[in-house]
Image 1 (cartoon, rainbow, N blue to C red):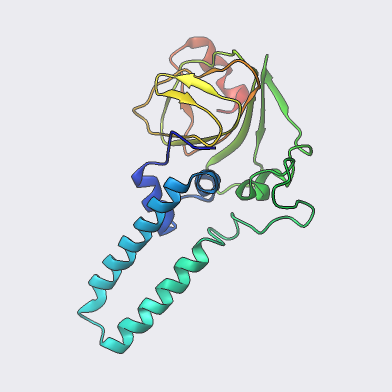
Image 2 (image 1 turned 90 degrees about the vertical axis):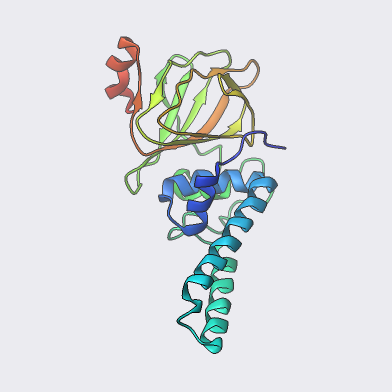
Length: 227
């Protein structure tokens, strides 16, 4: 798996600083598990953050205090790869072994459970199923399963949407998105995903505001779907 679409710089910096919501963090961490390029960029962002913090405080700290601060910062960076946002990224569930094809990506298990086979999909529309995470901090986090060849309604975003493709693929004005790819979208993006032939497209998405639909029918149905 070699992702072609990645997290943007603002998302990586916010992730490094612990400034993303837990829901956005879960999706970003799912991408980072699959993308070495973004892991390298994250490490660079964390190094820059550490240098900036050191420069800011250097004038006020003597050599001993700077050394202690550096050690504490390195310890925190080591810990950041294991746990963020109060356990959003958790250890492997005891009933799921590493590499098990039935295992959900690790960062999503706190919200959706440990395995694909245990998921209970809710019918939303013909060919479209969804699972909404019940316990969130306020942002929306959901899994979507969309049948092949389906055209989703044209929409834009009132805020930020971060989507990670888990299975299948879709195409829109931004390109072809397949497993491992992230769609890191802001409120200036309008698109219409069309799922590719073959397997259903399954993705996880976090949103900090409802979608915006120009079509009247989609707007009428929006309260029922909850997007």
